[in-house]
Length: 405
Image 1 (cartoon, rainbow, N blue to C red):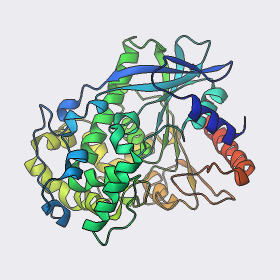
Image 2 (image 1 turned 180 degrees about the vertical axis):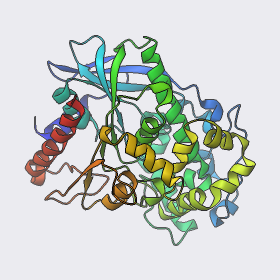
Image 3 (image 1 turned 180 degrees about the horizontal axis):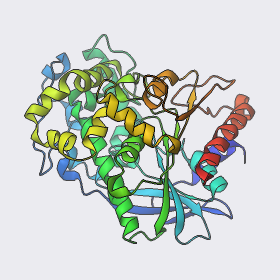
Image 4 (image 1 turned 45 degrees about the horizontal axis):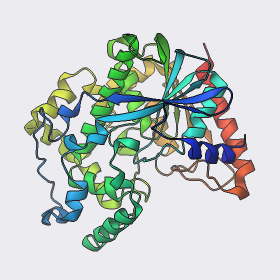
């Protein structure tokens, strides 16, 4: 099936309510429930009562209003983020998968539509089960209101009025932009929750508690965009040795966070981008002096140094590069020449090191049609043949890496 046809078909049949959805005679989507045990680390949770004093910003001087009530409630009270459903695309005849690939998506994603053809192709080509695991406050872990076009358009227009110099505000990014702008720490806490949720998911597998995955299943990663950040921290930290043999295929990602350019109508508006960068690069260390819980996770827990090293290029350079050097043969990266959000040279700077002497394999590609980071395989009929060819070429390489012994 051509890429465009597969995209439209999968988008039509996907849902969270049916336990099993047939894709074709070989593959199915199976849905499972998950409950996060890390509500307590979020703002408003039992372990985190930090009200997040706002950083200096004109928008924060406004009285609470409908926008605040809609988007800025306590993170720990957002039930969709705590209990949710997730997809596994796997061979129909396989009761318990012996090999899985956990697929990590990009920043500010609300729907799996873009990734369903990717996951289906990975499953078909490798024979492995593909776990589409949503990060905190993304996909169906976010309230439906945040995806309501009418409401988000209204919020975006109001935000533009309040911040006349605002760039790239849209109904697609206004929910996450408003929340990050108000409390940039949310990026850290949601990242930590996502990390520990994946660890719990893997521990369920190891304890033979997952109904569709064998307790000794081989676990690999496929990560796109900001999903690479999560995959890298998981791989670098290798908690309890869970990921010693994990291969990590990365597409359009891999650079440290402060070398990304996330200002886009699909990701963050300019005000949120500046605020998040400012917090991570300029304010985070001083904030941790006052925030005992954040300091604990960033300095006491074993994954803390790896998390910090991936936030800012100048953080723990020696340690980061030594770690990537040790696991370099377990990474394969494809980056795109016209990617302006995560430029190829920043990916190389991070994964191949300042001296470019770390042997992580990175391939630079450039497609013959117009594409952007957020949409590398556009679904337009006039370019469908070219997109199909480039998608197949790209994902064949990824599959071959993930199938290598």
